[in-house]
Structures are given as C-alpha cells and as structure tokens.
Image 1 (cartoon, one colour):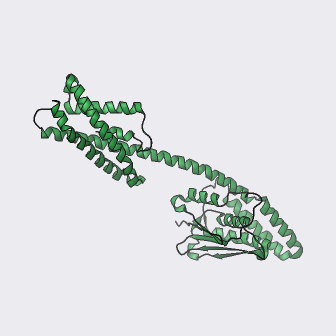
Image 2: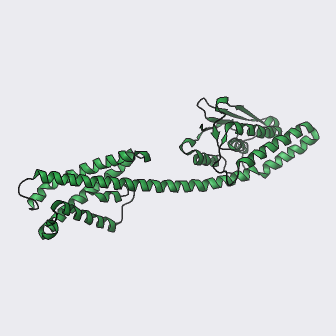
Image 3: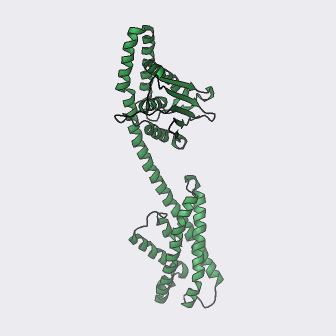
Length: 356
C-alpha cells in the first residue's frame, strides 16, 4: 500500500514536499481503483469519501513504515543481505499496512462505501492487494538503498584514489629524499678515507636501496604489493646504511618466520616506519634507539621501538604513519586494519599480511 516508502531516504533526509504529495495522491487513486474499480470515478460520494479515508490510512501507515525502515538497514546493512532486507521490509510493510486497513474497515461500513454486511472475501482480496503493494514497496526500498550504498562507495573510492595519488607522490619524494642522500654521501666520504673496504660495501647496499625504491614506485604501480621476502631483502640493505651512519646509536633486529615470507604487503613499509622512528626520537650512542621488526604467531607484522622523544624544530617532510595507514586501507580494503599501540615508553604498530 505504501510504495512511497521507498522514496524516504531511510531516515536520513525527507523527500521533497511536492514529490511526497504527488506520490501520496497517486497511491490514493490506485488504492481507490483497486477497491472499487470503475465505481470509484463514477460515484462522487465514493470518490470523495473513499479518497479521504484512504489518504488518512496511507499517510498514517507511511509514517510508521518510514520510521521502521532504518531499523531494517541497521539490522542488515551488508550488500550481500539484499534478499533478507527485502523479506524483512515486506514483512514490516505488510503487517503495518494490512493492520491499518482492518482497523479502518468500520469507517468504510459507516460511510456506506461497502455493503452493509461484512464481506470476508472482499476484505481478504483487498488484503492481498495491499500485500502485493507492500512487496513492490519493499523491492523499491531495496533498490533505493542499494543505489545509495553504491553512491557512497563510489565517493569513498574517489576519496581513497585521491589519497592514494598523494601517497604515491609522497613515496616518490621519499625515494629521492635529499636529506637521506646527503647523509649517505657524507658517510661514504668518511668511509673512503677511513675504511675503503667498508665504503665499497656501502656503495653496493646503497645501490640496492635505490634500485628497489625505483622498482616499486611509479604512476603505473599504485596498486603494487610486494612479498615480505623481497621487502626483507631491501630493508637489510637499508639497515646497513643506517647502522653505518649511526653506529651504536641504533639497533634494528629482524625476526621473520620463514612460513610468512610469501605474504604480501605495501612496499617500503619498513622504511617508512624506521624513518618515522628516527625522525621523532633521539638517536645517540648514549641513548640508542632500539627497533624490532617481527612476524606474529598469526601472520601479522609487528614493528616496535622504544620512545625517547625529541623536540622538533620543523614539521616532518612526509605524512609518515597516516600515509601508510591510508595506503593499507586503499590496497587491502577491510583486511588492511592497522593497529597502533603506544605509551610514554614504547611505540608499536601491527600490520596485516595478505596470503594468496
């Protein structure tokens, strides 16, 4: 009886007044035609009185249907629950609308719109007609809900794509970070004089770092994932450069179970986390920064370090952790949940691995 309920925005925003009135009148006319067929338009008393009663019933039932609609979507919100939502909406609309009709039966009799005696067959026929309309209304409600969900998802995808573009830009900036390059060259100049053998290895590891960064970054690689094994080989070279530079000021331990090495992850994850730790914490031989990277028993990555915050004279060059979280959410969808744990003494972050 209430196909207009599909136009209600499920408790979010009412439809326009003009549209509501047009649909209300249209449903009233359809109800009159269904109840009294050709007599509805030929009998002025029947048309006026019947329309008034029908409009009152439809308006009251509509208000209740609209009030109950959001409860259905809150109970069954997922896209794969369409059939259950339609069934539940049909049940709600059918019960409410048929109940209002049976409550209004005395009004039909008192106004002479139906025969003097109670006609059970007529009442059941009308009830079936109302149930049919309720089923149509339930289907239209689901179509509207599905469209709104699709539009919301499209907006979220567009926002995530925009964030991903920014992430890629920051990743490219990071791979050619002039500060990192300057520090490497400065360390290299010292090694060439003091330890030529070490200098040669330093150059080899530095080449591996930049080769890997170039291989995983670029406008055509925004959805790329890498294995933990390849990321681990890269970060070992990166750690060598850092330990050569900071010496006793930093220690980075790796504890990866071999069974998880085939898991996939966002490239440069470890570099971003290590750079974030170095940027926000003091690194010195008297107060060394201890970083631990390991896999958990459930196949996740756990990165942690002691906190010894330093005063920053200027903001960081890259978004760091927020950028990484956005990237995981974009590439991993629901599986990309990142857990942050921190207090005054320690910082920890747990990241997912994908196994295919």
